[in-house]
Image 1: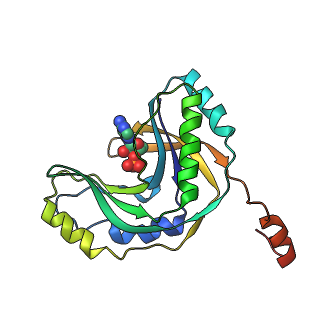
Image 2 (image 1 turned 90 degrees about the horizontal axis):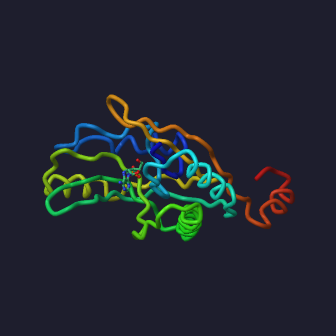
Length: 194
Ligand code: 3AM
C-alpha cells in the first residue's frame, strides 16, 4: 500500500482555504476539501510487514501539541513548469521538531531516509498548464492569505489510492501529541478544560 504521514486540518481551516481554490489559468482540478492536509512524510509503497513496523515506531513518538497557522501562498516550480500551488505554513519550530521525530521513526522502522529539506505546505492544485505570469498574478492576489491559528493534537498515517477523479486518502491510525507540562495545572487553576 501507498502510505504517508500527515496532519489533518480542522473543518474551519479547510473552509478558510476555499477562497484559494480557483481563479488560476491552467488549473482546473483543485484538491477537494476532504483531501487537504499537511504532509509530514511521504512513505511510498510499503508492504504489510513494514507498515506494521512504521506504525509501531510512530506510536512510540512523544511530542507536544502545538498551535499552527496557514499563511501565504506559493508554488513548487521546475523551470517554466508549475508543479504545485500551495498554502504556506507559518514558521513553527514544534512542527519541524515533529517532522524530525517522524523521520527518525520511519528510518528506525527500516525505510530509507528522505534527505530533503522539509517545506510544510498544503497542496491546493497541481496545474496542468499554468504560465508563470498567471501564477505570479494569483500569488500576488492571495499574498495576504492567513487562517486562524489551530491546535495540532495528533498526526495521522494515511493510505493513498487512485480514485477515478482524484486520490482517495484513508486515515489508518492517528497518534496523539501530548499536553505540554504545566497546561493541565493551568487549566485546573482556571477551573476549565484544556
Ligand atoms: O499533497 P502533498 O504535496 O502534501 O505530493 C504527494 C502528497 O503531498 C506526496 O505525498 C502526499 C500524499 O500523496 N507524494 C506523492 N508521491 C510522492 C513522491 N514520489 C510524494 N512525495 C514525494 N515523493
